[in-house]
Length: 323
Image (tube, rainbow, N blue to C red):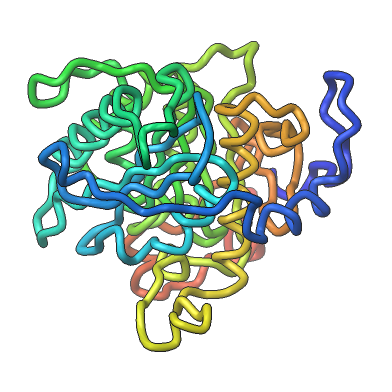
């Protein structure tokens, strides 16, 4: 069931938070922190680290890239999170045409360990190892699920993950869903409305399996859709125009994802109740429409029929004439 949620409701908990729409506009803008860029090369990994210039015991996120992409395609998004006080590491492994979500998930776990144990900047910036989350886009969303699961990945044991965000998740292998059922961290699944269940998007299946393993009383799995967005809309395309702030991604999609991701992690990792609405599965926040996972309607066409452009049968066509 889509679009049946309130968009201006305040989260219980005694906070006087502004309406979600107002928070979305606030969080879509750069945050108050100046940002420095480092490199995971100092610990033998490839990929950047974006960190606020000052701060101790900060929250942090390890971010997984999409298929055939790399961290450079998410520079503005990762910089944005850091400007709000969230340290971000983005491993650049598994970028070939036949990547493994297990390999990238292992890298994300390694990045989480690095974030929780290494001083950043001039040595004065630190991360609280108990406030680390994972996130990923498309193929990288599957890797983030692997990283947050209780599976042993290539010999690397599970790490403590306090929040998971899957952006426009894409199908990988069948055993991803059993792994998802072992995730206990609160989760945000954000998808294009047309790709809840398609050949290129598996947001609904992923949310259902995450919910299956979560505490049913915690209501910790949030599924939201962006009506006109696709996974490709989030990808940045660096060019000379980047020098004047044009990153090549779809503006509306990038703006909405910035707000959703920042608000969710500020609540779940930083513990800021002002942003509790971003973790509330009943709240439509800005352009991101809340979807009720147990009652969500699946497309009437299978994935291949959707890919071929077939039209869904009309209700009249589906009517059965009594014998």
